[in-house]
Length: 234
Image (cartoon, rainbow, N blue to C red):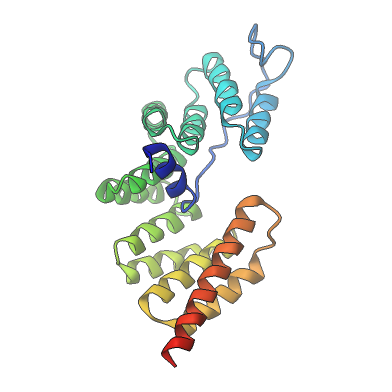
């Protein structure tokens, strides 16, 4: 497996954070992407390209936006996210670093950079960046979940469970939180707790988005794995 394929596979395990730039309705001047369109419209177009899996198009539009707004930390962060998901991690980390240089308080950039470090198994750097994201924004549910996943990868199940408990205090991403807490119980050997959380995850997920559909498939596999092992052990 080459490096790009590894990055894409690992990125599916992580809950990325798209930064929301400050609204700016100016056009992009002579850019052929932006001519006659507001920056706000172009940013919405980037999201559409991402949903379609058209990463080169999203990168091209974000690059034009950055040329127009070179001090927009959120746009650097978002382009870094697209670079990473398209298998270009070195360009991604460059953009994350630039975003944090422009805005050291952008918690979503710390979360995304931590995700990058986690896929590279740079555990200390990842945990430090998650801590920074949560210090800046304690309601960053994605950072709580992602740090919990990292703790679990390190076999630190108690810390992972604590993180998912924190994430469940908020209304966002409850399906993801239950799924990941269930997986942590599962790997720790608490099968009843795991099964209960898998069922809760299904109740909160509707499968309307591609991400939720993929998570539902993953939870279903985890549940089947648990039940199969339980039957063999009976």
